[in-house]
Length: 254
Length: 321
Ligand code: SF4
Ligand code: SF4
Ligand code: SF4
Ligand code: SF4
Image 1: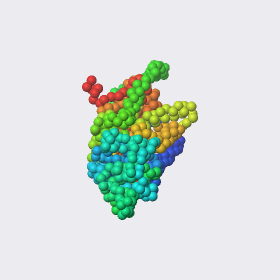
Image 2: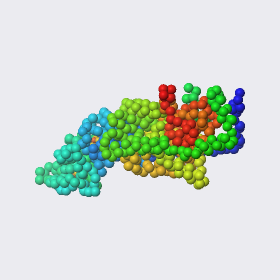
Image 3: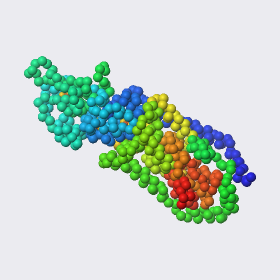
Image 4: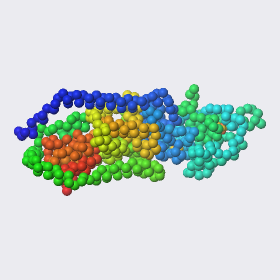
């Protein structure tokens, strides 16, 4: 036996104990604070403080928040940059993607649904491969009295004047290059922007308001095919938009 | 096997133990060192510190860390599609990568095994196993760099007696690991992700900062004023996950007792000084010891050691060379 096998000299016990006890108390306090802080994320979620329009293919909201790994790959592939990531005020929704439709809608100009293909976790469900299958929400004519078509009015000029930054890939111009709405001029005898630019066939139509053939007035009518992409909300020239998306609403919901 | 077990135990929060048995070589070396005393010892220490220590590995590591994060940022900004995503999950030239801890959180909360995520974690698992330890932490995590700078500020202030470090129990990270895993499973939300500074900073760099950075700055301020390196040392489950992955790996930091003067320069700079306990007098059971799994492979100790007793080493390669 050599001397380095001797047990180390006992430390001054009392002092060490109070020190350790304080350290353990501090650790518990810190742990509680950190877990507490993380649980604050519940408030915005449970109270639905910040309802968000989720990208195409998003699974049921609760599962979506769980499944999304918050990587932003969906953000990166979208050609019109329609997807943004949530911030801290969204609680567990921090880093989770949404589409701010009025500012920049999803126009499905990406060929299939690129964001869905990019998602590594299936938070944007790979069961969806066509824009027609998407169900983000439903459009609804929110302010019928403001709607230009219902007033029988035409529309001339840019739908959303500068400094509006939103873009749209017009198939008839150059389907690969997004055009700023603030730079694209219309000249319409009757406003039908929401119908004209809707990317989904038969999602929305303009219907006559009365039986009178001389009556110019029409009203936008949303049909079951509507996927809730937000294009109509973005393009509507009235301020605020006459037509809006009801987030996650499905056809037949109250 | 015993060594792996005790290195994991230390990582989970146990205090490192002084060995009870030594190899004959180690005993002989300790004996020889004991003969060097007083003025001779002082002379050796002085000679060793004559050369100013370098920042070689720190500089290489910082450059790597910044480069990795910059690739994410630039690749998105200039739309090169080389790397897509953030540190939580990404696609690198078409290959899926997923941060192990984020993937675990998602699978616990969502309760579905996702094939792309399994592929992504597989790639990452292999990579970090090769590099070993918590290499992710010090070579990739952007919060690590911020915390390292905050630590420098803390130490500078502490030197002027303006702040004091209030250390916590290292077991708290293990407890929090279990708590966050349980929270994800029970609540069905990836609770930890909402406060993870790694994810927040990574996304802030790529997609632009938001409110969430306030939380990160708060953490840094807290670390500067109260607890040295609080997040990385006592909280972050990502570190623990990678610690397990890299527990047995070919690359590591290795300690050789021979020239070591035991004055502990290495332990002063280390984020996880408990892994360097073997550098204390009579704490190494052999003349060469591999540093434990909690080590982040940052190389600060290698830079700091005046006698070159700590080195990066690839297991088995020494025998080949
Ligand atoms: S489907 Fe819409 S949101 Fe998704 S990438 Fe295409 S345009 Fe962007
Ligand atoms: S790609 Fe999927 S996992 Fe990543 S942020 Fe988008 S929805 Fe979330
Ligand atoms: S774009 Fe707006 S104003 Fe024009 S028809 Fe549609 S809802 Fe009415
Ligand atoms: S042991 Fe060395 S390489 Fe490992 S974390 Fe500490 S200083 Fe860094």
